[in-house]
Length: 633
Image (cartoon, rainbow, N blue to C red; front, side, top):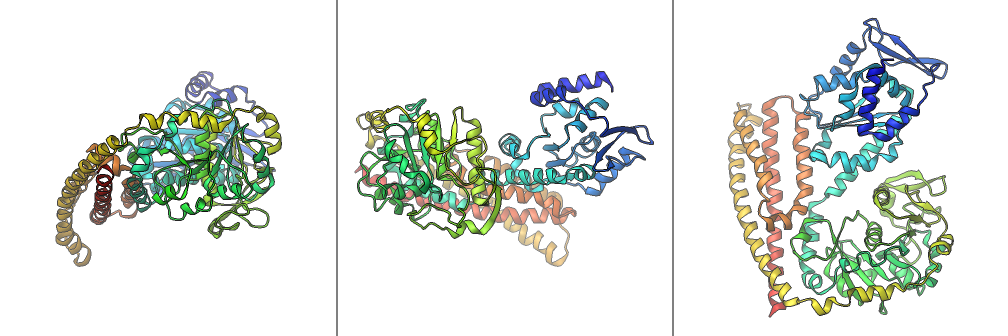
């Protein structure tokens, strides 16, 4: 062992990965299982025992030559994100970073190494300090891949716009590592893919769906102005217990307990749980509503006596939701750009994709501790049901059957779940990871949610819901001053002015995009099509200059504040989708003329989609202006 090299590596590890450094310090290598040998060229090599034989990490003739052939065989042209399944003694990563990373435009390198002993030995043999401390290299050594998904998504992919290139990710499966533990590396690959999927979902996977949210938002202007925001309740329940009620099939086991704790816990119902609660004479304090699609209003239409129950709704829901709920409302913004456009603070929460995620974030925002979850199965019941009895759309939703997978259950045994529930669960796990209080999963069934403390609902009530604090009175008192201070006509006039300013800004942006699209069409007709169908030459330098100007437009077309705030969330998913596909063309076309011609065609398509979104938003703003003018008059 080279003591000085090891100390240098350990110092670097302590700086960036203190927990791993602590494990290395305590680690004791089993010498009978790991045998260091010298390759014919003199470099260190390693034999690792598995079953009754040894696996050699590298070809013993020359580890460097072996790694070089491996990397050449990968045929890497463009690799903005690289996933190494295995680290070994570091030869592959050293060589990639020195010879390929710059040429392949690598932005992020993720490394999984299952065996801490191998990593420990590598630290004793060569200087890894530059790799360890590099801000764009991320090591997961002997970590459960399940524990890494949030870090990959939240800290790695979100940095430097990396998610704009994730479609071009390259996977480097080191052969010896795969032989030593293929199950671990297969799981690491699956978890990384899941992190990628979740990042795409967070960015928005449907610009039409995002536009529908804006359309609904503009239709809800008078409701937004005339109701208090969730910010009126921030930390009003500090240290008080909350129960979030989802509509999983296990809810039937413990729903009856809610009836007796209304004065001892804040009860937050998901919209789909509301009618099952009301039919059993159980009255939540708040009902969370998030979905922008049609049909959400049906959750409330049959409930007439809602006195003392508040609808906490995100105003991207359809306006008919407001009318169908006959009680008082509280506005909850999501962390989307179009809420900033209002310049009217109501309280903004970072909410995941499901209404159950919203209920949790409301409880956290209000300061609740602990947060007790019930009905949060996120899995099929044994009989195949997906929801509690009396859920409006039935106990068995066929939608979840389209992608059945297996997951660990709350009590250890596997359960059947779906890809959709997997995403909801992962967002719960991320929220819980950053939540400073105690989260209790009292679902009594379903999929395991990492980070929760599992107990029965009866146990949770006996331990945490002992004292009365009358949540309904706290809510009423906290929002009581709103109606006295709000100036509705003034707020509506301010928003009307912003609608008009934004509409003019959108028209100016459209004119700029139309001029560029006109040039793109000329290039398509006069150069790209003759190249594609007649084999004529193209001026690649000219095509490159057009693509570069387009990328400049993408950076600047949302410069106007009103345009940016009303449009950014809507077009973001399209930008992410386009950029990933645009960058992926480098993986498809090796011939530069083909590459640049394909880029021009993609740019034309993008301009058409974005232009239509802008035009549709102008139409929505015009309708909002008419509605506001009528309200003000």
